[in-house]
Length: 241
Image 1 (spheres, rainbow, N blue to C red):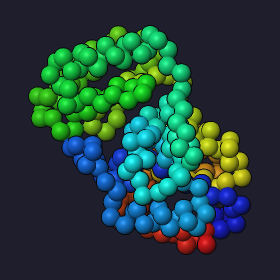
Image 2 (cartoon, one colour; image 1 turned 135 degrees about the vertical axis):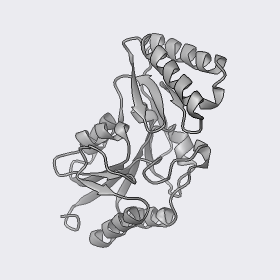
Image 3 (cartoon, rainbow, N blue to C red; image 1 turned 120 degrees about the horizontal axis):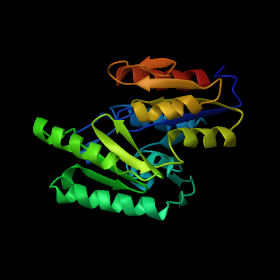
Image 4 (cartoon, one colour; image 1 turned 180 degrees about the horizontal axis):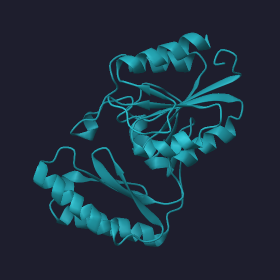
């Protein structure tokens, strides 16, 4: 099926999927060998897109690929292959709440745990001790009780995020699918935020869960990184020749 497809599209998450989680998010680098495999897959004609929680421009600077399409901030941003960045509209009330939440997190002494992106505020507690995690968990619960209608909260591996409604990884996948209706598509992701993407794949799309341990998921296939991830990309490239 892959070899006969008129077009191939590989959509990828980054953190936890292609790169292991680290205590400091800026240290997250691709697993060994993945960079060259991605370059080879792209050169062979597969359209590669990234769907990530990171800001789109930030991820672009970390990738070994040029002219790559990126949906950042869980679909709130879109970086085209031409380098043009567009953002979804953000309601004023949502923007105000996110500003205030970021200020509260900083004011409680947890500035190191704060990640502010367009349309989102994330709290990371992966590098905190037990007391710090408990305090941040309680803070996230307190903030969740004050959310306006235009925002919602979602747990992820190592933290909690508040973000604007209307765009997510699923809407990004739906947009890609609409623009590439003849493409055979696969999406690789690791955590709960990727379930929206799995659900939005076309009927013949392949949902791939990439993580050390399995969990309940809509995914069709489970890969342990990095070895099985490298094998998958190598097989994709070999079959697509």
